[in-house]
Image 1: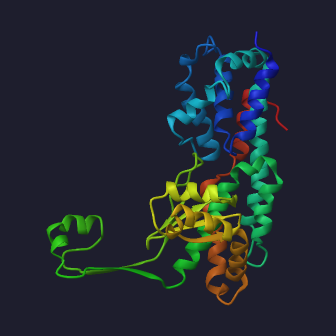
Image 2 (image 1 turned 135 degrees about the vertical axis):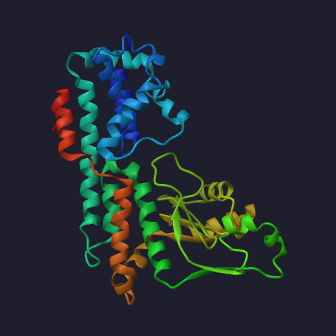
Length: 345
């Protein structure tokens, strides 16, 4: 028989690696609950719960945090791999859990603890004013709490988006589409011009407000692109120190010649030298560090144009945070735990 300690070690590893939503641990908890309730006969039979357990997990996360896992099917199935929680380890955890739901309660306690830590940090932002908000302090909260570090990349993305979008939309910047020549191609493809470009047959000029857009509000695995602007720039955001390897990976994964990289720190001279050697330097428009972001935040919140920027910046931060990290379901979650018989702290 597999030692129970091996299963607990594997579970703790998954909890530690998982972002605050804890999708994989909750999936494990619901599998164990179904076995305890008699709906699963044999935890060694993976196919009896592989697909169904995703729906059981979503039935918990949707009402309590307003979200469900949007990762690929392959990534979701990885929870049952030998490096995560294979059925042989679930069997051992099930033996302990079926008596009182102790393993389920352990997982939901971790879920509650992570959300408590997150809410403490996010409330700093949501309750801030332009005079009290300090970007360095806010990001530092996520570094200080081990349980929040896995969510730092999304927080950093929100921080960058809020600043870039608020500056651009309050700058009076306009983006223009203009047809040179007689426009015969777009006359022939007038449906394309209208549907894809927003140009009508009798209009050879279109002007729109400049904007930045996040690619998606999701905690799925990293994509090749985090943000894009409707004027051509694309943005890759990494709360990491930028080195030549990371810069090369970013450039090779993003098909654009106007890449803005936002990072924690950068040895600009070294990175530029290496990218020149690789022939990539012409595709990087700029590299922005955390130090620059902190300075720009300070100007936006208290500088010459703060009357236009400050309130909107704080509002945008709060809006994006609430979209990305809905609050745990309060009394409903406590009622759920009591109904299951969990005694959480």
